[in-house]
Length: 102
Image (cartoon, rainbow, N blue to C red; front, side, top):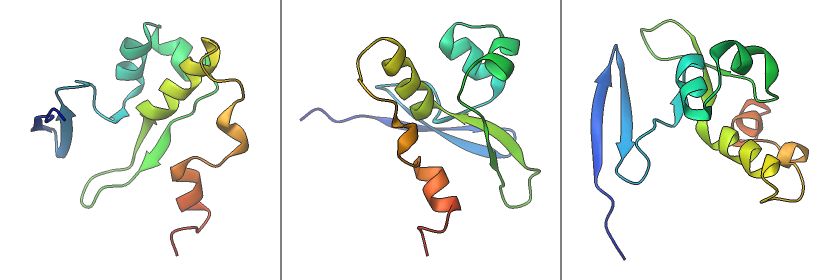
């Protein structure tokens, strides 16, 4: 099994874990999500069903970021790679928010 090298890149006050298999960070700003999808930022903010999640870091202001895995699942649905939307199931974030982590 091949090893995946990981690097840690510092952006502002947040550490971003990058993988050689996928150079995109897990959580994306609206601008980054637009680049990832090949859309304009306004399309990402107003025209897709995936919404950003509010993330709070210690000592840093709250940021609304898009989960790249949710974007990938949405693209898979559009491409016909999955037959049903996973919106019926809670995302890991929504499950945590609903108290499943307790």
